[in-house]
Length: 193
Image (cartoon, rainbow, N blue to C red):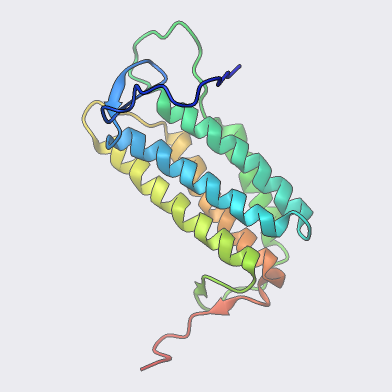
């Protein structure tokens, strides 16, 4: 159980923060960037839910589950799997979570109009907010992949697969709230030449 009584501790005033293992790292560290960007994606989803809560209840429920999972992903990233014993079982993203997002994508995608062009970010306010969340999720994925390339760092394949699927979901959800793709704003190559 998480218990947060005091919000400021002054321990980060030196530009470091603590991982779940207790190790201190610079706030500019790639691992901190990874789970910080996951937090940004989560905040963007929260903003999108302002637009989905009243009119797209099924999608809103899906987004709520993803928000909770993104905290799991942040916890996963905050406890590096370096093979050292921890004395407890760390929270990790599982295939069950990824599979659930895939099922949600399939459920929404079956009613969408087929795409004949790339979609511009926009349409309804809900769609625009979901597209923003998608771009932040894609950035989180890029940071996580970069982290896997850093010496001594590890990110599970399932964690990377999960965030990839979340960004896919956000794209499909944006189209779904755009009248199942009928209100999508499509890219017209060279339109303004």
